[in-house]
Image 1 (cartoon, rainbow, N blue to C red):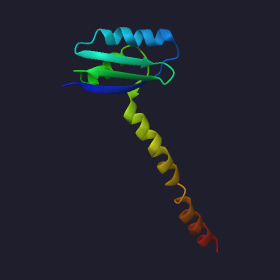
Image 2: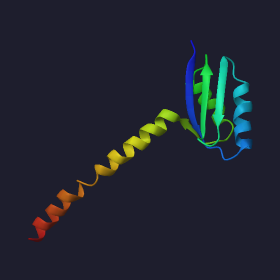
Image 3: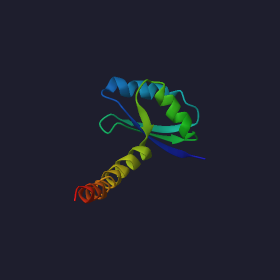
Length: 100
């Protein structure tokens, strides 16, 4: 069964991309892959397991994470930022009550 795995990989130059491409080219079950340095995105298609792709790319020494995890973290950040904002308000009210 063909699967698509998308990773975020810290790549700053074509040399970094070359290291990732060389590592991926040794994987079995690979149909195709795309390495985008500008987006720091690696897309792999084939009969591969996501964890195996992650491990292979990580062995290049580049910081690697699943693309979906990055998107979720960015979405969670604003929610987390709003959650602490209401928390100080009750504390301030309690402090005001204690002072008054």
